[in-house]
Structures are given as C-alpha cells and as structure tokens.
Image 1 (tube, rainbow, N blue to C red):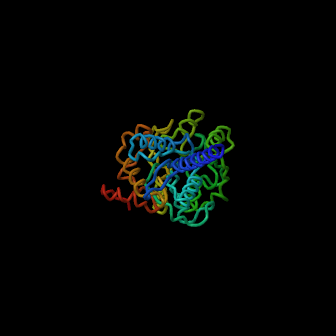
Image 2: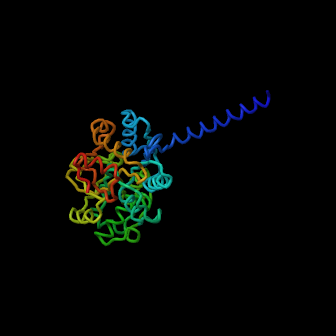
Image 3: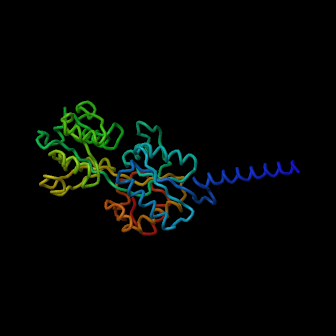
Length: 337
C-alpha cells in the first residue's frame, strides 16, 4: 500500500513538472507548424518616450483585436537601440519571434556590420515598416553668438553619449558636410536630457542637442525656463546629407511652434523603424503589419505622432523587408522599395 502511494506521488510530481515546463514554453513561444504562439516581445526605448507609448498602444489594441488569439504582444522598454538589436539577435538565434523599434541608423549599421558595439554582420534582421522620427534641435541661449552649424567649432556641446543616434547624426553631419570633427573640433560633453537643459541654464555648455517629435516637449520645457533659440540647418547641405544617408531626413518647423520662434526653419531628424528577424514567422509579421495599416485612427488616438501609412512604410528603411511584410504590401499594392 505504501509502495503504491509512493509511486502515485512520484507520477503526480512528474505530471506537474511536465505541465510547468509546458507552461514556461507557452509563455515565450511554442512552434506548431511554424506558427507563433504565446508572448512575443516588442522592444522599445525608455518607457516615457514616444515610441514606447505608440508601441504599447499597438500591443494593447492588437491583443484586444484577437487578430492572433494565441499571441500576446508585450511591449518591453530597454536601454536604447543597441540593446533592442541585441535582444532581437538573441531571439533570432533561439528561433523565437520578436519585434523592436530601434533608430534606423543604428539598426542599419548593425545589419551591415559597421556598428562599434555589436560586431559582425547581422543579415537575419529584417524590416517591418518605418515607425516614427525624432527631430534634431540644436539649442542655444537666445543671447548666444552662435548663429549657424559652422559656429559649433570649439564650443561645448551637450549631447547623448557616443553611439546614440543624436551623437551619430551630429558626428556624421559635421564630418560629411562641414569638414568638422565632432570628436576633435568640438568640445563634446555626453549628457542626458535633464543635464543638457540644466547645462544650458547654468552656462556649463554652449549648445544642447535635444530630440523629439515636433513640437518636442524637451524644447518646450527648456524654453519655459530660459530664453533659447534653435539653430536652423543649411538646406543645401542637409539635402546632400540625407541623400547619402537615407535614414536621416529634414523637417520643417513652422513659425511659432516654439516660444519666440518667429520664422519657419528647417532642421534635421533621424528615423526609427519596426524591426524583426528572419525567424519570426510570416503570418506573425503579416498580421501585425495588416493590423497597424488598417487601424490608423485607433492607434493615432494613443499618440498623435503616429503616422504609419502606405506612403511612409519605407521611409529611411535600408534593411530588406521581412517576407510577411512584403506579402501584405504586394496584396495592397504598397510600394516598399
């Protein structure tokens, strides 16, 4: 009797262990006929940013729609574009579905094997669609003698750390169009956004590089604390720059967008994209693209900067598209090349 009871307890324990293992797998991804099920991460930058808000909104609406009832899209904020790409590469190696929203310049460099942090080519990364942009504002105190980008030479410039898109943008622009070394001819001071605002106020930096969807809250906030001006970009040089680097672009800032801005100005921007990898199955990508493209008004209510449309899917995208995205684009006659 005792032996039978002991045997029964052992069998029950095995059943529970197997069930627990199955549960753990379903919480990540199970492959059944190459179809994605379970939780699929959508990696975005910090939780307070535009891309996180849009990503979280898409995830919530997608899950509520029951477009793929066996899938839960889960937005996860991480520390920047490089970490997003690292996570996607790791998921690709494990054959697990995943999406991310990195800056397009960093994603392209990683894909091509030109990134200083993630070494080697990563041709398994695949594009899904353009996602959004971040305008690059060159901000100085209103009384500053700095009037053009040429005047940045020798000045103390507060900018996000090396390897970030704001840094990459300024470094490449100055080298390509102005023959100025951002590392040698400019006194670069790596700072976070709050420190850049503080530095402009206390005079510890001459220039602050702040980014965001126009009108950028960071610019609005600092202009409430002090009088500032935004340095316009030379349109001819910016046109040449963006032609050679398609993941960068130009933006028009209408007069009165910011305090004391009396004229229209042109500034630069970097694009962001929705990225996945080749081991995310076609149906998963197809259904997500379909949902995003066909629920524009609902997603726009989440954040008014949402602007993914048939005209914008390939904006700044250099990485080849995933077959699942291509399938939808061809069905709807959307140009993606």
